[in-house]
Image (cartoon, rainbow, N blue to C red; front, side, top):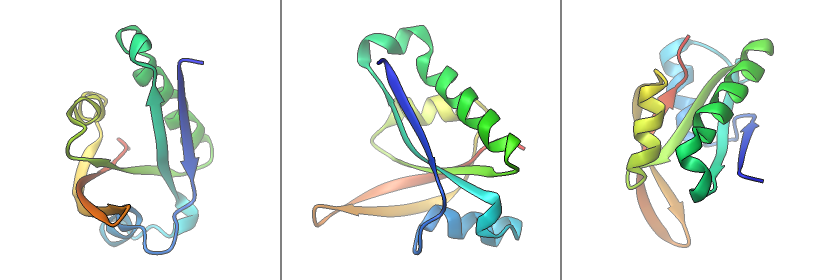
Length: 111
């Protein structure tokens, strides 16, 4: 395995879904949250991240879902990938894990 991607339904209190609902007027039945994207370091040069994103986007389009995601601001390479693929910033959020807070950027997939 060289990578993994997952799409979830919006969860209660999920900031990225709230931002997109407010901007678009969509309800949760038309929103998919790209929740996991992992690529093994040795597979990154082979565009595995881009390929996984293309598969996720095609899956969402077939189901009439608009994909959104949050990415930590420290993950600059991921942010560059999303921007290269045409994802648009829709806001910012704060992620909390392990009692610590991390700044995040929220994106929506191209229409």
